[in-house]
Each structure stands twice: as C-alpha cells, then as structure tokens.
Length: 183
Length: 237
Image 1 (cartoon, helix red, strand yellow):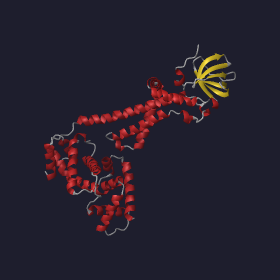
Image 2: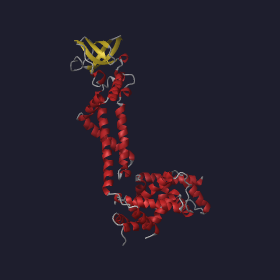
Image 3: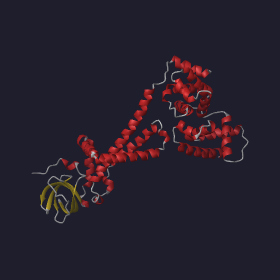
Image 4: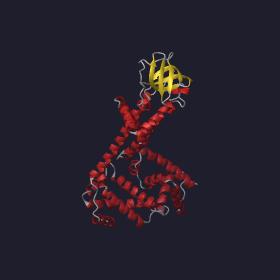
C-alpha cells in the first residue's frame, strides 16, 4: 500500500526524495488546474507550476494534517495562479482544450434534464465564452466542482470560504452559466 | 522521478531552498489570535465608555434638547466599537480555521463577546478611568468632549446646565453656564435632587428661560454627564 499524501508531505520536510514523489503525484493535476484558471500555454503554465511546488516546499511546516494535502496544494496553486494573472499586464483571454468545455456542458445539461444537444466544437467554444463572461468567483467554483471533481468541503478549504457559501456560489454559478450560455 | 520533479529538486538544491521553520508559522498563528483578542478588548473598552456615557446621561432631559438622543449619543465610541468588530471579524477570518465560519456569525459573536466584557469593565469602573484619563492627557479628546457637552446647553428649550456659584436656600441659585454666562435660577417651585445641592456642583436645570440671565426651574438634576467644560471653573469666593 502506498503512503498517503499527508504522510508524504510530513516526510518531505526532511527528505527531498519524498517531495519528488509528491511532485510526481500532483504535477499533471495541478498543471491542468493552472491552465484552466489562467488559460496559459503549457510552457508558461509549467513555470507557474514550478513556483507552486517551490512554495509548497517552503511552506511544508505550515501544512495542517487535518486538511487533505490535495486541498492545501490546490489552495496554493489557486493563489499562485491568481497572482500570476494579476502580474501579467497583457493577459490573453482564457483558453483551454475543447474536452474541458464538453465535460462541463455535459454535466450541466444532464443535471437539468434537458435534451442533450449534439456537442460539437462550436458548443465548446460557446461554453468557454460563457465561462469567461462569468465573474471570477463563479468561474472558480464551477471549475473546481465540475472539472477538478472537488467536493464542497475541499472547495471550502481551497478557496477558504465556508461550505455554505460554496454551495450558494455553486448554485448561482450554475444558474448564471446556463443563462449566459443559452443567451 | 519525472522531468518536473527533477527540475524542482535541482532548483531547491541550487538555491539552497529550505522549508520555513515551524515556529515561524506557529508564531504567526498566535499573533493572529492575539490581535483578534486585542481588538475584542478594545471593542469592550469602547462598550464600557459607551455605558459610562449612557448611564451618566439624564434621559428625562434629553427629549427637550434640540436633536434629542441623536445629539448626545457617544458617536466616537460607537464608531470605535464598530471598527473593532470589523477588524476582529477580519482577523478571525485570517486565522488557520477562521474561513470555515460564516463572517456574520463571527461578527455577531464578536459583538456579544465585546458587550459582555465591556459590561464587566464598566462594572469595575474601567470605562470611567479610560474616559477620565483620555480627557486629562489627550487634548483633542478633551476638546471633542467639550464640543459634545455643548449639546446640553439649550436654555431656549428649557435645559440649562452649569456650575453652582451661590445658593440662596430654596429660593435662588446663581449658576455659571457652559458659555461662562451667569444665571439667576428661581428654584422656589423646583423639584430638587435627594442630596442637597452644593457650591461648585455641576447641575442641569430644567424649566423655562424668563429673561436674559434669568431662568425659572421646574427641576434640578445632578449633571454627571458634564465634566469637562465646567471642571476647572471655580466658584468666586
């Protein structure tokens, strides 16, 4: 049985090999999350990812073992990505792959029990256009819940908001997204 | 080990990056709680001074004043209390698990905590000490109190505060008001306080202005709320 992320994080304080193992476990998830949040091309997103892991390493002693390591790592990634966007003066509009967009619309459409549309490239473009039009607080919860598969408690820990607020934000985000998408 | 993890370990090695020591984080968390406690305490001090002001005010006289209660409320302390509650709620949210709690509940709990602690401080006369200390050692506050006390000076509306200079038993009082004017106050039909009026005492006379420097009293009350403007004035021998 492999060691848990939380134990690996504890071991990483004194053992760099353990930290490398943590990096291996999380690099693809966090890179994808950075790209979903920032729309950066892979090479730039990798730079942000490196900063994220360095920050995680520096702050290992601040990791609260009562949290999931995953939530803590996502929180740091979220903050670093936001900082990166703020620093970037000429930020390109949010871009990501079509698969993400198709996933999101599929989930939202099936929840509302409306007839499934044939999802095509155009639909994906519309989904991302709608996501871009959403206020950041709504976009963040939609991405975390539908694309990153995080539950309410994890989103609460990542965004540092009470669970009740996360639930409210998610409901509003879904409604707003559908409204913008169907306009 | 992947390319990314190797790159990161190389950077850690090359730049001698180390995890920050645990004590720094512990100290930061403790500092947040200490600052939170401090703001609650300052909020409680504000509550205790508000209670001093409210208790010292003669609420039967206030409706006669132009502007009523709005004119005599201790706004400065209410403002300080409000700011402390905001800061306390913000600081609590910054603590390790603070974000898990609804900000409104945190704010309401902070208000409750400050009011309970403030009432205790009031009971042991800390509020009075703070108020007196500020008036004595902080000139801008002294000026502010003087300005606020002027709200009680409304002879045209039947409220005349001042210091007793002379007493003619049960007939007349000579009063020095907040603006330094002398008043002959007819107390023949006035309801007097339980304790006899003394020279130098600060009082509030309720009644009717009958002429320049003349006032017909319906009642005489101790002027506990008025301390600053009249404090250093001495009655002539």
